[in-house]
Every structure is written in structure tokens, then in C-alpha cells.
View (spheres, rainbow, N blue to C red):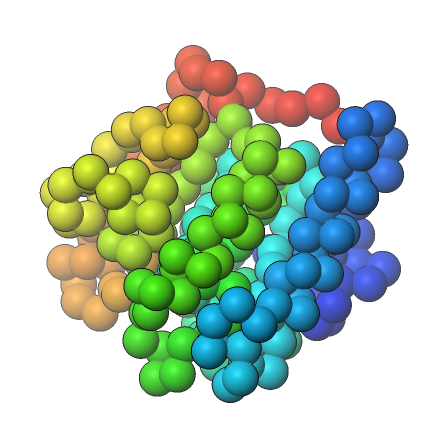
Amino acid sequence: MAARDADGEGMGPLGPPEPAAAPDGSSLAWSSLRREVETCTRCPLHRSRTHAVFYRGGARPRLVVVGEAPGAEEDRRGLPFVGRAGRRLDTALAALGLSEEEVGILNVLKCRPPGNRFVPAAARSCRPYLDRQLAILDPPRLVSLGARALAALDPGAPPILRCAGQPRRALGRPLFPLVHPAAIRSRALARRWQDDLAALGSWLDGPSDGTAREPL
Ligand code: URA
């Protein structure tokens, strides 16, 4: 899932979802939400950003992956998970047989926090954006990456290392928590990542409401 340019123009599946044929106005809602995020000044993070980071993926994903916050490369390009962690994520998703259009990728924070330190207050300001993105995309399944994303989706969840790799439910949807790909700095965690991905593959293949979606 190699990302291409910063604003997604003319990029097909990696650009903004373009549910142009959607009869319900979701295309308009999505593009106006995107504009809101890109011009957001709700919290101090806007002062240090190069780009707000909105989304990459398909218009009707069967899986939405929720990360924590953009890093330096994401801030530079305006796309989520396009740095080293993103390459690890894309490799994993491709190995599971997921196409670019089947997946959506976004973050809890839309702007890079200085020093890559997650800012809970900014997450509260950003929260309506996350909720609106999920409402419009309406994905059958969610994957969270790391403790912050898990806490945003499921505040009552056990610690990430206890529940990564085990399906749960959050926000009325099936949720599969994973450790954050940027946190894999030991052989043990690399093994854990691979094991959890295998479990994710079985979960995706299993019976649930996460079935393939009709293309628009
Ligand atoms: N880590 C995240 O959580 N999100 C990104 O977009 C990049 C790195």
C-alpha cells in the first residue's frame, strides 16, 4: 500500500474516498469534513503542523485501521502511515491479502504532536473528527494500533499487551487491537506482531459482520 502524493488528487484508492455515486450525501460530508480537518485550529498542534493528516485508503473499506498520531513523514506528506511504521503496516496488510481499497487508515490525532508525544487534550479536540470519519466510512471492522488508539476506541480495555491479538468490540463495531508497528523494537515483540497478524487474518476470514462490501 505505497502512498503517493500529499493531497490525494487523482490517486484512485489512496486518495480521499470519493463515494461519488453514494446517494446519501456521504461524499459531500466527507469532503467537507476533510476541509475542516485540513484547516482546523481547535488546538495548539495546528501551529506546528505542515499538513493535517486526514486519511488514506478506499472509499468503502471493510477495515479501518486507527493509529495514534502523524509522525514527521506523515506531517510532511499529509498522509497517515507513510514512514517506517507505515511500511511495516502496509507489508502486513498486503500479506493478509488486503487490497488498498479494502482498507482505510487514519489517526486519533490529525496533527503531529511536537516530539511525537501524544497529547491527550488534542485527542479530545480531534475526537469529533474521528467519530465523523467512522460514521461516514461505516467500516464493518476496526483495528487499533497501540495503546492510545485502543484507549480512544475502547477506554475500558485492558493494557495493550494483554489484549492485542484478541478481538473485542468498541463503538458498536468489532475491534482487533494490535501493538503499534513503531513499538516493535525487540525480537519478542516482532514475534508477537507476527502472531497477532496471523490471528487478525483468521478473524478477517471468520464469520462476522465484516464481510466483503459491495463496491459503489
Ligand atoms: N504512527 C501513527 O500512529 N500514525 C501515523 O500516521 C504514523 C505513525
